[in-house]
Amino acid sequence: MLVLLDQTRLPAEEVELLCTDVPCLVQAIQTLAVRGAPLLGLAGAYGIALAAARGFDVHEAARDLAGARPTAVNLAWGVQRALEAFRDAGPGQGARAALDEARRLHQEDARGSREMGRLGVELLGKLVPGGGYRVLTHCNTGALVSGGEGTAFAVVRAAHRDGELRRLWVDETRPLLQGARLTAYEAARSGMPYTLLADNAAGSLFAAGEVDAVLVGADRIAADGSVANKVGSYPLAVLARHHGVPFVVVAPVSTVDLDTPDGASIEIEQRAGDEVTGSAPPGTQAYNPAFDVTPPGLVTAIVTERGVVSPVRGDGLARMAGGDFLRETDHSGVASEFRGAMG
Image 1 (cartoon, helix red, strand yellow):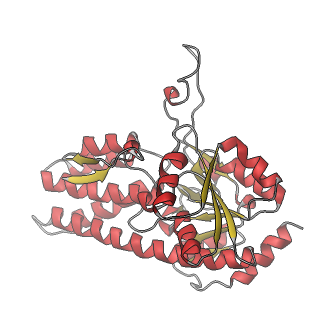
Image 2 (cartoon, rainbow, N blue to C red):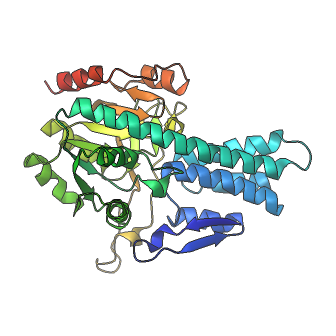
Image 3 (spheres, rainbow, N blue to C red):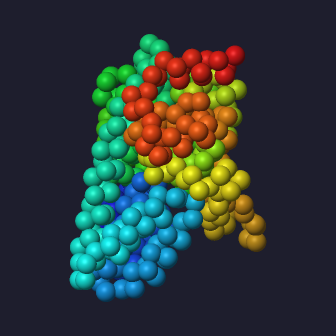
């Protein structure tokens, strides 16, 4: 049995969802009861362990799980890690091997989250001298998406612990309000100074000089540095560039997909129109992509547990993903690169 916190019920109530088979887990993934790139990887791995323990067809389970949300590369990655452990195990040992691998991924994710928080807050110190950061974030990237403290939110949490978070600006994140329901929930529980805003109010904040940095996560990073993230991220990157504000992506290395050459090659999940047509006249058609793609030229830096890539180019991503990367990045160079790009 796999026990999940049903994120569709937050923040009103904390309800556990019990999945005893793979179809239940697939439905939980598709309905966003469980969501967020790193957590989807963990869910995929635990799903393989569940299938093996229950005597289901593990390869069929792998196909169903990996296809549940096509844009999030971590989901298929977690499935593959556990599936390989299952295949490599001796007779009768497949279920235990898959579970051990899922638990290993869980521990790796927690460690990676801590490292992203550390590296990210160091980077903020270079990009925004003087401290007192006013950070704008989109969607939800905290403990609800991770085995640890999250991705972009882990950086926010580290800044808060250091007494350097002046204000967290939380986009509602239409149409399903992951910011309003989930990020605000996590910020409130952490005692952070935060303010919620409608997505289309972000431009006013930038114009008023109230944003020092934008921090977002990622669901897939292509080989050229194009970033697929929750829809609404790309407009924030455009606004940030226009107003001279750093736009930083924080995501684990597992989110980098070197087999996807560029942003145009990323499959974008299209969700049901009824998620956005509730107040519209009957019969209204809807365009409802779950993600958009930010080109690498608008990304100031990508922070992973292995280091910081800036400028965002394919060669740097390839070296990082392959492990041939300087872990302790010189963040002063990132800041110089950003200031140069801003003219």
